[in-house]
Amino acid sequence: MNIKKLKMAEASFLARFPRGFADPAMAPILKKHNVEKLSEFAQANLTRTHFNNPEHIADTLVRIVSRSSMVSMFEKPRFRDFVRSLNSHEKEHLAFAFEKRLYGRAKRAGFEEILGMLSHYKLAKWPLISTVPFYFAPTREAFVKPNTARGIIGYLEVEDMQYKPGPSWEFYRAYVKLLNEVKKEVDPSITANYAAISGFLMTSM
Image (tube, rainbow, N blue to C red):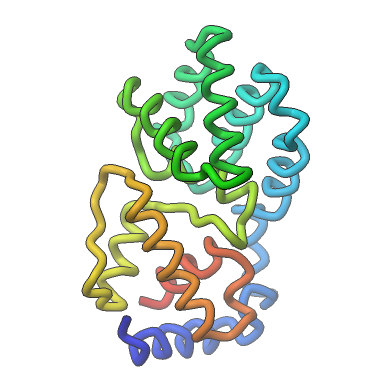
């Protein structure tokens, strides 16, 4: 990672927004994305107890994706229709996959099961596979937007990472690690969550 370029991006962002994401000038952007409110909704509706009710989980997944400002208007209805087309057994499978993805030690297995279901419906897109985990745990999970991820990797000259459009657990973990390394190097006012880190970089590159 090119630390010098990272520091240049940080300086550029803080010159425009001295208080980072707490700067008054950032208020309209924060209101538009409303990560905190949707994160609260995800955490309240994806508890371990809720996973005993696959219908509730399916409805919650659709609500999160539909309300996210980071998922494209093209992908939202396709995801909604995908979930609604599932029978009760398939919804149970989807809920179980998300439970593994969000809890415990089988996160990779959950990721790959979700990816498998989305792939079957030609919906294996980074935004759709990363949206729910991000809102559930925004300080631990990353939202992967293709152009953003590609841009960050290129700008920071990360030589051992190459963006690929097909989602994979290996790339996801490497991307989270990269964002965590960025977090350690920059001012805390711009690192509230992984989407904030991505946002400040894309704004400043």
